[in-house]
Length: 244
Ligand code: GLP
Image 1 (tube, rainbow, N blue to C red):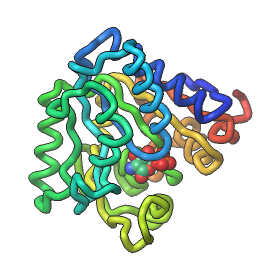
Image 2: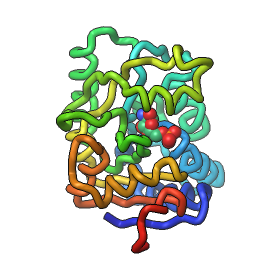
Image 3: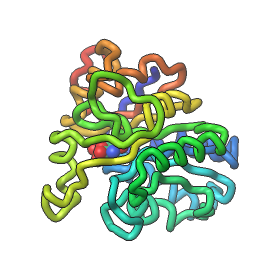
Image 4: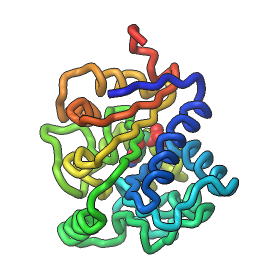
């Protein structure tokens, strides 16, 4: 694991955007695994700026998002589809036919999970997976549990995750209780992983993911077994590390 220290959220975002930008430049038809949440927003903003400056071209890029709330439509402003369009896709020259996000409105869980796994397989897998980190160590929506889930699955969100994400909804009762998420196996099959983390509330989860035992109780800890992980984090998120 390579860990890059950033002095601020903006610096973290720029450094992370550099990693993605390098891939898009070297492999214009790459497959980007994308994430939602507040952590990657600055990264997307920087990539949009470089696109607007004429330095990046997304016309051949393909994407696969990590997760989506179950039950939310694309038009719902809290869906991850809406998030991706409004925080990234609408401002770059990506072909929307090349973007993939689990369909939160598909009530047939087994069919949706199989469809999404097949979609990722059809892309030839993910070249670079961007990840945030949940306060409880979750990646995508792979919540702490007794085992690592493999492929795309539907998960019951933990109370702590519902609480962390309630800030985006009118009330905690509006936060969906379930989500579709790529599984740990899919994430681990990405050829490269880029994790961004900022803020004190990620410090313990980040420390445990990098230094703790590899356990499904801290889903991010599985990343220790991946051969190509880059972590970009600010000082607050790295505050439990004494040797950096
Ligand atoms: C959300 C998402 C994750 C994200 C995490 C952290 O629930 N499903 O993919 O990485 O929680 O979010 P944030 O970056 O807003 O702290």
